[in-house]
Structures are given as C-alpha cells and as structure tokens.
Length: 373
Image 1 (cartoon, rainbow, N blue to C red):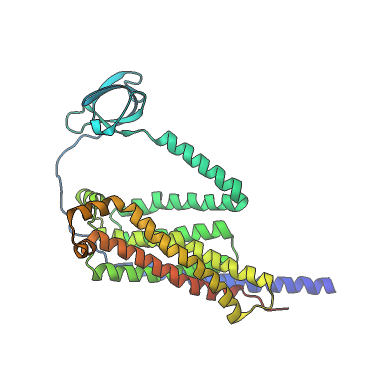
Image 2: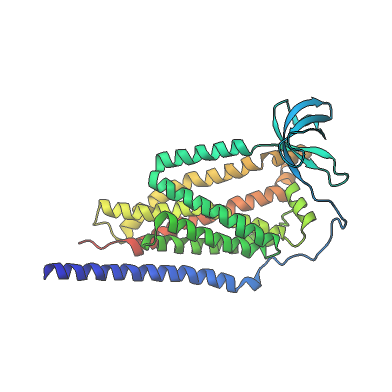
C-alpha cells in the first residue's frame, strides 16, 4: 500500500512538473509567434532597387597552389587544383603580401581577361588544426557538458549558415531574419545543453522576454539616431552588390545575435544558482532566495559589461584609429556614425544583459523554487 501511494505521489509530481514546463514552453512559443505575425510592421523596409554595375562578368575560379619563386609583381606557383594540376603557372602578385617560397596560397582567375592573380594565403589546414585543438580542450575539461556545448555551437553555426545568411541574401527582411534565427539558436542551445525540463522552460521564457525588449529598444535607437549602417568597407560593399539588404537592419540584427551570445550564459547561470542555493539550504524561499541569487548575478554583470565594451573596441580598433587620424576634434569623432553605432551596440546589449539578471532570477525562484519539507 505504501509503495502504491509513493508511486502515485511521484506520478502526480511529474504531471505537475510537466504542466509547468508546458506552460513555459507555450508562453515562449507564443512570444515568437507574435513576433512573426507582426513582421509586416518591420521598421526596416528594403530600399528601392538600384544597380551599381550592370554588365556581364565572367565567373571566377579559385585554385590552391604553392609558391615556387617571386619576382617583383609576379610569382610562379605549382597548382593543386583544376585541369593544370601539378603544373607551374605565373600569376600577378602584390609585394605587400610578403610571401615566400613554400607558402600555400589561393590563385583566382581575373574577370577581365581570365589571367591568374594572387588572392590570399591558404589558411584552411591551420584553421582545422585550431578547431581540433579547441574541441579536444572543451571535451577534456567539460566532458559531458562540453559535448553538449559543442553540439549547441554546431547547431548555432548551422542556423547562421543555412537559415540566417540565405534569408538575408534572398531579400527577406533582415530584422526578422535575425529574430527568427535568434529564436532557433536559443531553442537549440537550451534544449541541447539543458534537456527538456522546467529549467529549460524558465531559460527560454527569460531569453524570449529579454530579446523582445532588446529588439524593440535597438530598433527605436537606430531609427532615432539615424544610423544607416554605412560605417565601413564591408557595409559599402554589401550596399553596392545587393541593394535589397537593409544595412540599418543588419545593425539591429547584429545586436540581437550578440545579445543572445551572452544572454544564454547569464540566464542559465541564474537558473542553476537558484537551484544550487536551495539544495544547500532547503529553508531558503521567496525574497531571501531571490536576494542571494541576485547577488551572484550582479557579480557576473560587473565583469561582463566591461568585457563587451572591450570586445567591441578591440574588433573596431583599426577603424577607430583611422577616424582618429582624420580628425583632432573629440566631439566630431564621437559624433561619427561608426563610433555612434559601436556605442549603441554596447549599450543595447548591456541593458539587455543587465535586465536579464533580475528577470531570470525571479522566474527561476517562481518556477524552480521548492517548498521546504
């Protein structure tokens, strides 16, 4: 009889847990569907079609090669691809590339006369070695958790490669392409790393709320400050090749993806902190549990915000130096669109991460907190 009662109680608890999980997942799904349903109200409509160059061009072919000798503005190299595989050819070369015999390079055919020219160094083998080293270190230290994190990373790369980029290139609205991709990445990351449980539901709900706020805030700020997205060579190149891509939408989409990159870490940490604190002391409940978990989150934020600012400055340092060389007026430098865009990115992402701490902590206490026996 006691065994039967115990079994019934465990089943009831499982049903209650599944009900809570279902509520959380449904709430997160509704938020995503509402965002998709309002896609017609996007702040980033594609610009009118214009043509930077309207003419016929030959397709370029890329070949792997090894440098044999260098003479001023030309080089001789052995091909490893194509019908001339193993043959020695001559290609145009820029002396500033600083090549030496034995270097692995890429050669391409000119779109004008079909002649060979130097494109870049061949770096794929080195990148493969670095990737293998990274996987080895993650698995050695993280083991099962490391394997899950690698699976999440692989899923994120697939979403960006096969969903986000193709949608943007096909003319789909950049803002909503980024939103959809961020939602898919969040689902993959959370379910792969956490499994299907109440903690995963809390994490997804927190991410959905914070990302919705960051998307709205970033769109408003980008529009209010008149940020066009034309800040560097890459943006001008995109604008020249494909005028259906909204550059200002790329700014907001980049903010969403950047926010998600650090957001899942914060939210998962807060959910785990709440559970661990209560395991250590079953009497912790409500406000006291929230306060202790919130203190841990504030320590995380204190270092993360500074890290974000330094990451953006480090990535944009060459362009910042160029802008500083062109003007001695600090106010003019700060007012430039490039600097303003970096400031907006840093502030928008930081606000979202800061707000994620109290929100995720409160949700974790509400849905993951257990009553004392």
